[in-house]
Image 1: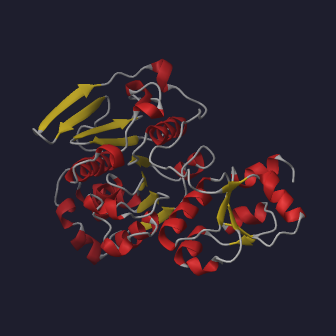
Image 2: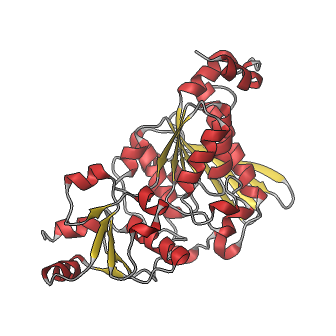
Image 3: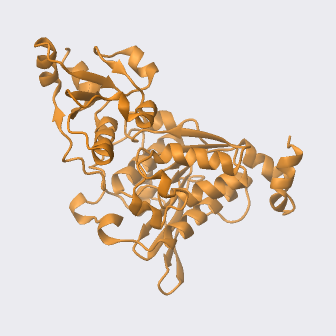
Length: 361
């Protein structure tokens, strides 16, 4: 059922014979996850929310940087240094109060991807690196979820829908992950600001078509867009059974664009020695309370969101060791805090709480 306000809001959809009330109801019942709230994710999220998709997930563990504002128009200057997932959720909720926004403020990895994806009907890939693309694609294959794919490079964009009704998967197009040394990120080569807006909007269009069952889905083909000469080419993709059938996640390379080489780290053995010697340190576990309550070492539990909202939670006069599940989230938090607040006393527990458990400390 729709309220009077919803009927007015979605009027231009409802009067389309191809969508109508039935199609709008399908949109309201749908659950869509967007991986990455960056150049592609911002326009995709905005149009999906505007369309009335009932439940929208935002999965991103990055922070707004001034260099993002040239193309990620969901954010503004006041958002610099803040969590992309959190800010995106706040702004989307203001854009359309009738949709539910879930935030997954975590770094997507083998440990959490299947659990997160299982709650959604469609996955939209707005990532900007090959390891994430392969992880997302493989998880979609294992769970049987359609994947709306987009990619950008300088002035060129790509769009396709993978794993849709037994259609080709991403590995049918790109069988193996390229070597990291062969790849340059947007921060290294640049990208025209309007390009992700175009491709991200195309992704939202495919989401709406899949949910409502209208039009021709971009499955089994890939759109190649060149914005310099405004050419659109569509190339056919064949399903390759030897590549398309997966039952387990594989191994995925280093994530491009996330260089935490300057973050100071300690091993679980070094932490154990510090505790045995009763060193004056503060250990902060940034996992959610549910995970913390299952297993933890003697530490303070401050969730990522609370920590990002108040940097004063961390002292500056003694070593502070941040802990998460596998060491990725805590490393990103430290890099952000060092950049924004000039912390010098933060250390990451290498490989997270799992390294502590494996050593039976």
